[in-house]
Length: 186
Image 1: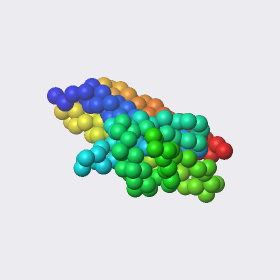
Image 2: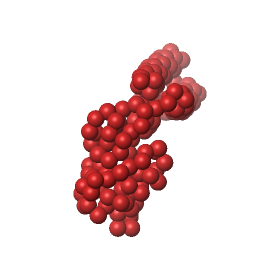
Image 3: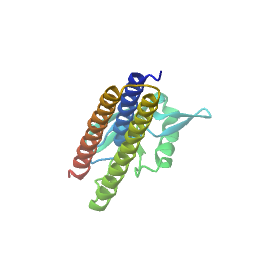
Image 4: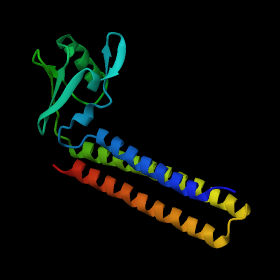
């Protein structure tokens, strides 16, 4: 007998992970204010190994437009600057001998529109993941019906999957709407 309860549970877990992934991806899309998460993708050459910036330095905000990157070892300042420039984030870092300073420029209206489109694309990607989870669960329920699952039980499982799909699609929409407001805020 096919375990439809486990399939629905697995569907919900996958949808939850999809929304978490979207939330993480949206932090990489720069809005107006400086945020240490902007540098999460930066990898630094540390004695021949490419490691995340967070493993060789602390990243803090000084104000809404400035990031400070304080390396654990001062000799890494040049490597950190090169890594930030190489990450193509649109930042022009400088240093004061102690830490790397990044002044986050104001966003232009055109750039805001591009970032908003990027956020919507991430949201659509998440919705595709949610629909994929829904489809897998529905296929499992359909197979279970052929295997002898009563029709009313199958209908309740299908209703549960549809309910989960609606809930997680609304979560995606809420995340995208919040990010769009953040991006468009001057």
